[in-house]
Length: 170
Image 1 (tube, one colour):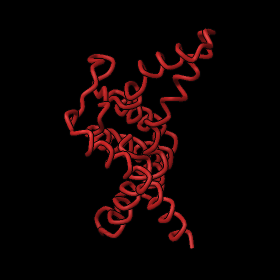
Image 2 (cartoon, one colour; image 1 turned 135 degrees about the vertical axis):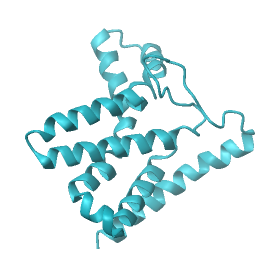
Image 3 (cartoon, helix red, strand yellow; image 1 turned 180 degrees about the vertical axis):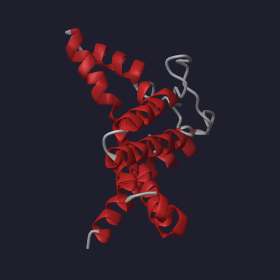
């Protein structure tokens, strides 16, 4: 993840700006924006998937957990096929409830933005997983100094994100 705080900030700001645009305000519901903002973090739940696989396999060594995490991190939940699955799920749920459709389509849009934001990250993203398991990254050859600055900014993004949550809740 480029920084979970950065994901939160950008998802929130895009939703806030979009809601002020009259055409978008009429077209998209609050349920869509809820899915977009809150579930835009969904791809970063992949460590929990790794943990479940680790527990299911029964080999509870830390080496095995690290191997599973390395194999699955930024793959299935960061794939375009995951987004397509969410869209199909939203359309199916939308047959019964427009609210469910709006939320699921918001989630799909948020996840797609999340994936795009993760592309510049050093580790890369397996955007076409499972067809192409190779991770793609945009800036893999950055100098070590820039990498350290980027890591320091992670903490700043968290601070800004939680400050935004605090001040917007008042």
